[in-house]
Length: 190
Image (cartoon, rainbow, N blue to C red):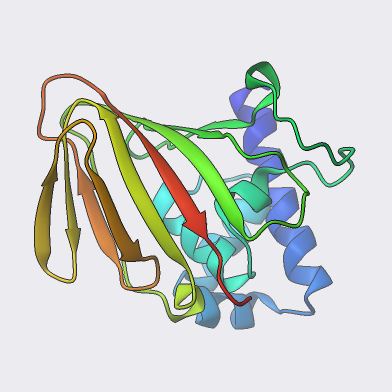
């Protein structure tokens, strides 16, 4: 899918979900801490959301990023083939996110693979809409510094960090090579 097509699809999906939940732009802006003007620009495909911004919008809409990118018309299957897994590149950092979990199964757990560029950083501010969600960050290659509740954790291959999604956190790759890790997200009691 071309970048312009992806931006249009993201914007259309946000608008569709917002309307389906009976939310105005103002209500979604208040719930997500994203400005009404920015949401409007995203819905019209005039702006590409960063990972941090898109995660806040998804949390306010009651879904994970994996659920957001899942095709609603897909046939439910317990198998997720590598070649068919949804991939998204964050325009802010260049990190690549692959939705590994089979979509539309109804599971509250999502498995995601991330390739995080050397030197990149992203901040996910606290978000009450994600308060019930938790995640495990399991590093396979490279190194990552993950800050959670003002504590910096330096992860090396094989390390796994558990944290609340709604608490807010920051990811930074201090290394000279991309880091590859998995996020196992539990959406909890949504």
